[in-house]
Length: 151
Image (cartoon, rainbow, N blue to C red; front, side, top):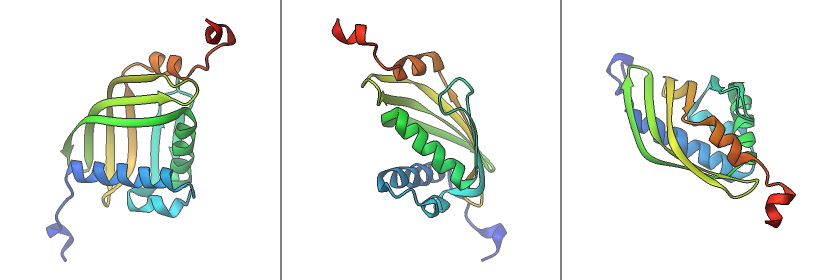
């Protein structure tokens, strides 16, 4: 089929595929990088805020796998609610309510979340997340002190 006539995926189709691949990868326990190729470009990069424990630029499929594992160490549950998206060519602007449950202490927080995602060939090429309150995230990740557990 002529490339110019191929149907472009909608923003929601791209996001649903990306989240589906991510969840299958995490639930598999195998850590097989090959699983990520269905939604993540081989040259993908995700830019996490410097204030978070999984900060930095996570590059390539191995980097994305490492990021997912690092986030899984922090959070026992991650849920996305009220997902909305807009698209301009290869860029998707996503917003939602993010629900995160800390693995360290069971604290759950909910906050607005947005992300700018750039896709290439239907796969994530670059992602920049914007968390509403990284201080709240860090507080939720804090392990309870012995004094706090006895009160």
